[in-house]
Amino acid sequence: MQAPAHRIPHRQALADWQATHFLWEVKGKVATITLNRPEKKNPLTFESYAELGDLFRALAFDTSIKAVVVTGAGGNFCAGGDVFEIIEPLTGRDMPGLLQFTRMTGELVKAMRACPQPIISAIDGICVGAGAIIAMASDLRVGTAKTKVAFLFNKVGLAGCDMGACAILPRIIGQGRASELLYTGRMMGGEEGHAWGFFNRLAAPEAVLAEATALAGEIADGPTFANSITKRMLHMEWTMSVDEAIEAEAMAQAICMDTKDFRRAFEAFAAKTKPVFEGD
Image 1: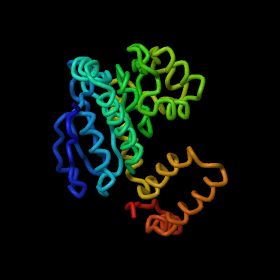
Image 2 (image 1 turned 90 degrees about the vertical axis):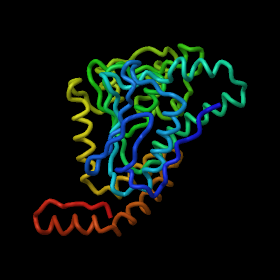
Image 3 (image 1 turned 60 degrees about the vertical axis):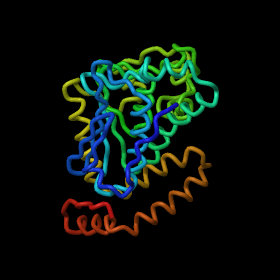
């Protein structure tokens, strides 16, 4: 059976929290998750799936962390689910056990999208299977020319509709391009991914983490309450009509206009200075 989730107290200061199945570091307002099994290209296990999902849920309660970077150790991002620690055990499960697993993996994507902090993935080398899903579920992606992304599910006899791929990937790169990747499972190179809009920008392999961290820092220095509203509306408006979206955004913007950051921005403009946002 799947491992139990690693419960993180929702009121715990996550800067002091110690991860078990990956590396976790908080510097200032930016947290970094490093998938850390470089000898196997950083595959996921039942335990790391559960711990990652619980962490992203807990981030909703930590107001000191304003942005999150996800990366992998050793020049690769993530090789997906570990063949011998996940795939092999799944071949022996019954249908209820398989559904338990697929729902658990989907909860990770739900947690990433519900997490109010923008998530930036720094992606070098191999980024396949569930690793490609983590990249897809992030808000922004920084890659390299050497990055190789593949949604490999059909290569192991599965459908491309895994962890929300058929809903999210077409919204990033378009229906036709997403269909090609999901039907063929082929590798998408870094430059192709950038041209298609999967990557927001490319960097040299030795600079990709620094580039993603700098981008996270820039976002973390902005009006972070408003940023969390932007993330929420980007997610919610997928299922809204245009009229519903306009009304929802009217209400969301009115809430933001009631923040101190909105007042700070006006006062800085009036004084011809740069606003210092505090996220409230």
